[in-house]
Image (spheres, one colour):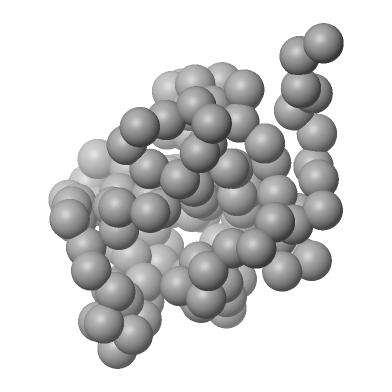
Length: 125
């Protein structure tokens, strides 16, 4: 029987992911989702999705993440800072953060790309 895509008790996620989610929450990121894709992706282990209220809000979220990443010494292999696209990405190998305006998130439906992943209730981590 296929595994259901339900929120499950949080597996052990690393402190880097916890720190990133806390920064997103502090900066009022919306509709935050943490998806475990370890069984589905050879590129990364976790996807963090977040909606921004506007392009300036997306840039502010990304700037705060960049600061946190730098302070924690987290290795980054990809970093998109072109906020005018409405979609910013931070790739830290073990996890990727996708910051999108609500319009971009609705248009691209990135959640559907990872619907076979397991959503983690990050409030429990």
